[in-house]
Length: 146
Image (cartoon, rainbow, N blue to C red; front, top):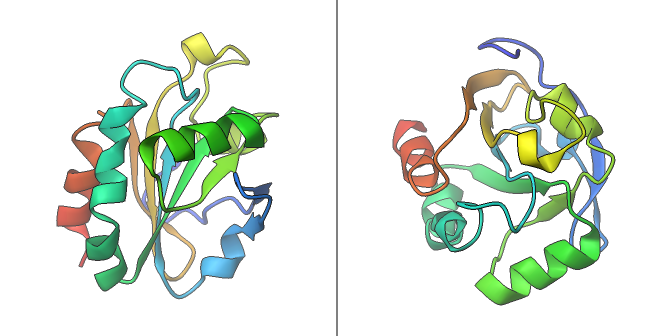
């Protein structure tokens, strides 16, 4: 699993609007990757709105939030609309990013893990958390950012 100081694996993924994101696009900022395996996974719906509610505070700390799911862009789009999400929801349908970051045990979303990763401006992992609590993690990660 990733640990502090590891170079964060690069990725190229589309979000729910069809825009392509590369991790390297965010060099110079803190990045929080929030993996929620499937939008309908318990604990990955309304509770995750804490990221939405804290977005301005994250921005004040020079931090970008990127949500990553194993859903399709269309499923993520419906999810974003339902909960008024205002940050990119990346579509990792082939699970390559999730596997690279330790967010999936196998190809079954039922066995996948919610993972939170904080990447520093230098592109290295600052924190890696397994089995994050979707309700608590957004505030916890925010409180630890400098």
